[in-house]
Length: 112
Image (tube, rainbow, N blue to C red; front, side):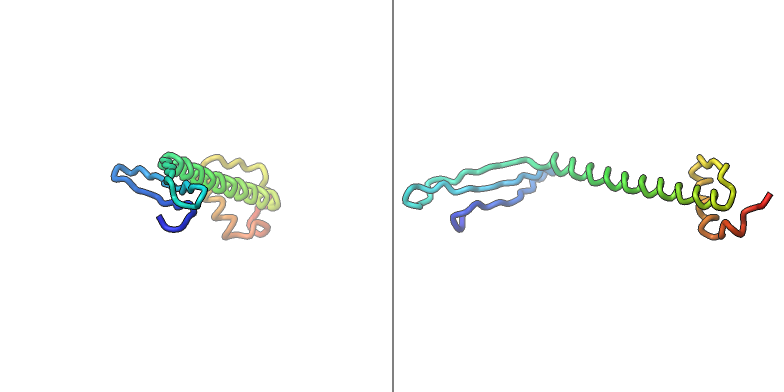
């Protein structure tokens, strides 16, 4: 062990386990090394939970984006006077979204 401070490393085991290993020196009154205190923590499950949390956050961001997109489509249709349209099907939502992107709703909206 080099130096007189703690040292930390990650150890990967063949079964996929990841262990965080921290070594802390225990010094005597004269400053000489008496013992080394090891702290071992299995962080495999912690890393799995972190991955799930990040994945959930990405999904939440995607859901927010989809809600914003749906609101934008509805506002464009409302501005064109076609606000009584209800779109529930994901396929139809994609079609209408594409139409809204391609066409200017103020020009293409029927004026009955």
